Figure 1 (tube, rainbow, N blue to C red):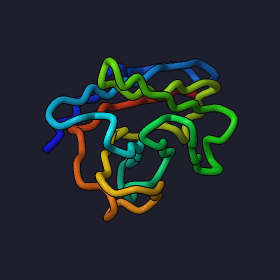
Figure 2 (figure 1 turned 60 degrees about the vertical axis):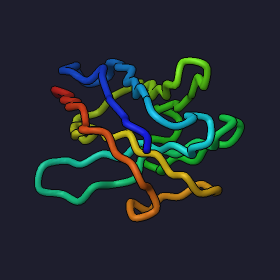
Figure 3 (figure 1 turned 90 degrees about the vertical axis):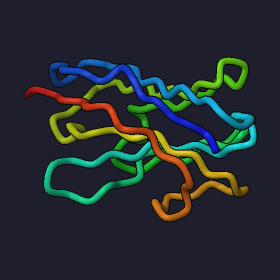
Figure 4 (figure 1 turned 180 degrees about the vertical axis):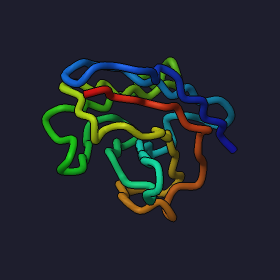
Length: 124
């Protein structure tokens, strides 16, 4: 198994930036494809972005493309989500997830492991 712990959430004004981190422990981090999802109050959990084990390929939801950037440091067992130009609609709990099968996926059901989430609130 792999354990995931998110950090870096908080309150920010619209137009501001935050960087989320997801630290992993357990099995070899570099074997996993990783993703970020988010869930706003009263809404389903939505895909945000995914990254391959090497970090060479990423896939973004249209709603965050050009504003968010995912990266990973396998030596530190950490994946990051840099969020710029934040909007009020980005307010949500952000979850890190890991998938132990090859291929990027936007589907919640394809991820085996989840963190506890970190709250991001964007004030307008």
